[in-house]
Length: 329
Image 1 (cartoon, rainbow, N blue to C red):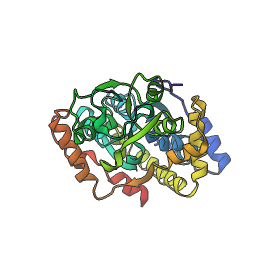
Image 2 (image 1 turned 90 degrees about the vertical axis):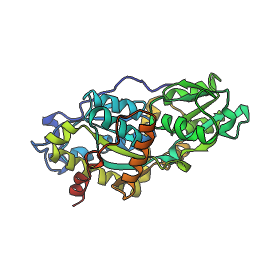
Image 3 (image 1 turned 90 degrees about the horizontal axis):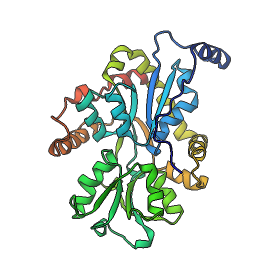
Image 4 (image 1 turned 135 degrees about the vertical axis):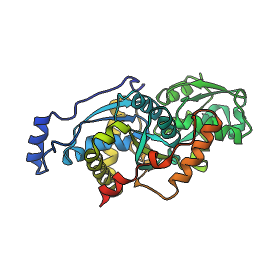
């Protein structure tokens, strides 16, 4: 039961339809200055606040049209943005630093913390309780993703495992539970809701929590081309995000039902209770915390040491705080 790895695309609103909808709902009509956003997001739990945004009607309320591009993980969205196939997308700090290095990507807001959604799970039948016990075993990992990098660069080394001590099996996060069930891998570095599914089905057990290593702030990133040409659209877009955060806080059942429908439509079977627990691990807090630049400096130094980026970036060019300040004014 795998989510399609190909890009899904939808024209959310035709221009005429947007005006009619706005009039019918008492919303302000779409501004002529607003650009259509090509929105990327990952189909794991990190991308689900964005999925909710797209289904909530809040973009339409602010006069914004969009097309959506769904992929299994944020590093793929980052690659699409480097190729200028997508205008905006969510990914964690390491991917933002990589995206800036490769294509000038910028963060327009720190969107959410997802450290609690990422874990290392081992097959339950193996009786493994510690990461160091993965020596010589097969570990499913989404190579190049933020979760993948944190496992190989931080979690495994702290457990005394260097590259080569375990067999890394490159795999999309949405394929890992099936691989664990089939016993073709022994463990996985994965995110919600796949961890919750594996535990609920008796397939896997948690042996490490990412949150103890990294709170994993996730950014909404944009191409420099898009924000240069469409600053008004960026501000209106972030106004919609402020309302999304209120829904996550004040209407959790509404949010959960919307997102649960996504996974149900893809053939995943899990109880609503299991899903709610998985979703609760996502902390939607759009803004610019004071510790974000030091955090990004640390991540960039790790990437530079691994020779994955050419230089430490100028954070004033990467973390564009002015748009969110305008949105909240």
